[in-house]
Image 1: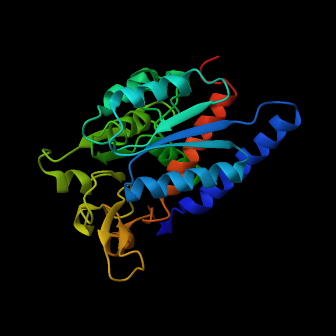
Image 2: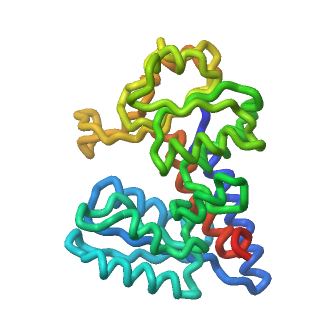
Length: 291
């Protein structure tokens, strides 16, 4: 079994990005600028945005954080999105999800200029990704593809099962794995899938993105399979100072023994999600997706 080390891979990619930014600035180019809008004080969102700001500093990006309380109106948020759309200094920005229930997440996503949508959630970017045009790809699926490629994992002709069909991970992941670069034969499974255990047990590559801690057990995994655990559920714990810890969708201890490759939680997919956001921001700054 080989551990797929997301921390180490992300560190390598950050160094590559930092060097490119240094070269751009040395040649008189503009410092890439990533902005984030954070609504409320959700613990996971606070942590994630703090990491994003730290990541920007590490690679030489400029970063901005716009904060709102939970009672911000949809109109106020839309006005700020429009302001960032029109700010020439901002290359890309994200609106951290989830948002309060009185705000339509889809309306906010669609209000973002697709050319600055470095989260890759806008329907224009999703559509371009599906038909194979240059696009900003959703950060988590993009990070997983990068992990697979950089670890030399063979995907061509392999049977891949993706558990989960969310617009953020499952659906785009299935599309990326089936495209010519990866050439896998993909099945998307979900809560209504019949014979889910048997389906997973035949997969050469199993990608668990269902958001259910410990869902994938050893009897669902084929010997020698590649297992990618996307789950990051915060569960209460007496073992940590914070009182909680991250749990993946896979029971790592029992599944790892059967795998050829497996991602840990934390330290697997998570760091790659963050680094993919940096990649998208650099692409936005260089105008490589939308000329």
